[in-house]
Image 1 (cartoon, rainbow, N blue to C red):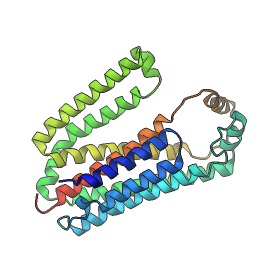
Image 2 (image 1 turned 45 degrees about the vertical axis):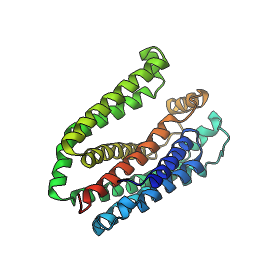
Image 3 (image 1 turned 30 degrees about the horizontal axis):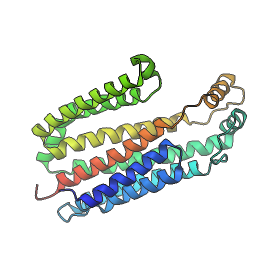
Image 4 (image 1 turned 60 degrees about the horizontal axis):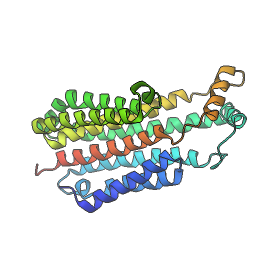
Length: 279
């Protein structure tokens, strides 16, 4: 059974990281994320002697790689030449078309994606080392719970975008639609828990959420491939428009941070629970 104090500390620091990402604070995001992953590493469920030593090392290795990926990403974020002052269109165009900056950005995104992929490999090996009967339950839950989780994530991401309000009519309609989707997801997961077990179902949800966040990071690294942009008028116009339009809080980054922390917490805690010798 999960201890209340570590769980509350985990939720509080994760919330700090998500709010920091939402409002563009690298320090709040970094401190919250690092502490949350540290709490997971030292959590009694993971540190329990009932968990095989090899599984503990794999889970902690994956969490260390996630922490390293976050530090690399936020270090570049904190070292922005503009600080807290929003850049003008001309300043941003000069920055994103600079070959040196493009190469640095690509290498940083590549390092982040590499760390995240290696973390997923650690978690995947830990899951693969589960006892056969528990691994079988995980596999049976994957087609239903995993696919539903991916669909729910896609719909939640869609609802968080501005065009969703215009499509559904109002913010209230978007909120109601999002609650219906989340309610349906909770209902299906509840049925899956009865059929496959709590830990196996939660592990599938965690893997799907974490995998989605990692895929987004890999996609971002691919998009940051250095390309000459000095004579690309269409690209520069797009940059100017993005500066001119006030988009408010950074919902996209906050969702990615939330997915990484939620996915890693569910995966690690459920995998540790499935690995214990007394279950």
